Length: 198
Image (cartoon, rainbow, N blue to C red; front, side, top):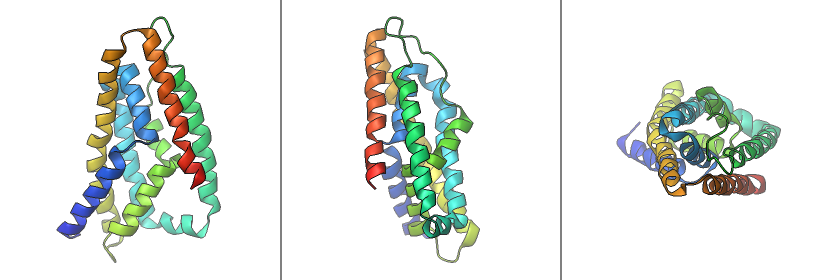
């Protein structure tokens, strides 16, 4: 992989990883409700889970998705249902009076598994492998793309978890935290619109 190709991939990974999407909205809500330390497994699950998915897609699953469009429809339905469930959990994460989080943040495995039903993450991976994997490089090219993506993704998603922690300082009361959670849940539901219209 040439230096120019690596730099282009890094730019693409940064632009897609740091912009709003289901992963980042959930990480921000988790940071606000559970703090940065308890959100670290969620962050690692997003980055390493996405990196693993990018690698597997680079090994040939891209062709499966192109040959069998129904797989995309199934993933969209699964993602939509799961995101609605997560939005409900976020909206109800803190009681109005106490402001104390109820439940637990996503685990490493839950966050990693979520990448497989997150169309934004899937399209990011497919685009990365299609446009940036060196031709004829085989599994090593797929691995290089996945590794570069994961290295850029982790600090990018970390910014969102950190922003959630900072937001919590300004929320103060349980009622404000509840309002924040409801707004984050609505934004998560709104993130379904481009997925369903695509």
